[in-house]
Image (cartoon, rainbow, N blue to C red; front, side, top):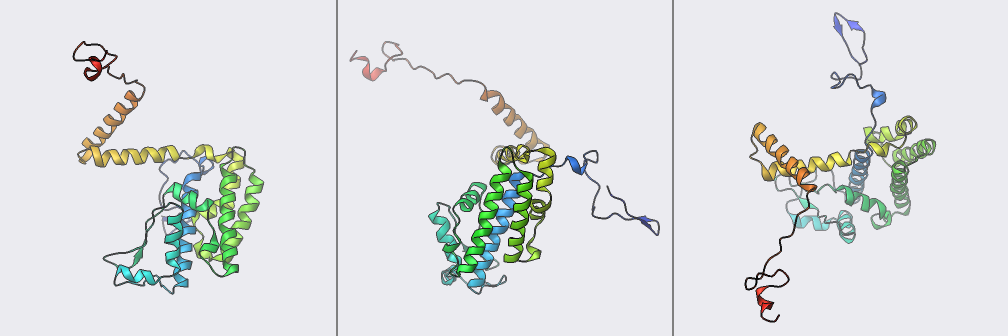
Length: 271
């Protein structure tokens, strides 16, 4: 942990809020999770797309709607709803009952990947220059994502493409829209690939799936009370793991008339 100078008997620390949970693990041993980087950057691109469409409809961040019917007047924002539904993604814009603001659900990982693969900015923007810029931005991120996911990624190529992509990102939006994951993509992904090889090997996708499974088990099959719930989750997971290696033998039903197993009582008389 970096240390600062002592000032009036108090030791200050820079860039560190709390002591690390695992002080023996140095920053050089930490590898970014490709899955979370993809999800968070795609989230940011999607939210910025919604903001652009809101601006075209003159909807401010604090705009409110008295009823759900009022959202039908939003010509550009509703394009997003129709395009996603054409892609087979169940997506619907709504008005929050309490805040009266426009709201929408977060897309899942497979839905984000589908939208990235089939994104066409011309579906949203009539301005050709704007549509070209946004299309290049989404296509650039799609290309970077594929390069990083490859088994033998080229660090130099990824670094150069990430620099060009971030320059395009800042030209389309503002510097304040740079997120920590975009910073990691621009300055550290290439460095991590040189040091550790393909970082996709360190993906936490399996752990995230386990987290979803355990969460469902907690809410559906436990008492929700203290350590007892944790014990129930662990016991259920152990049973599933143990039984997964066991083959279930299908019970052979016997004919009630002659006790044979190759037919039933309805066909017994015909044999």
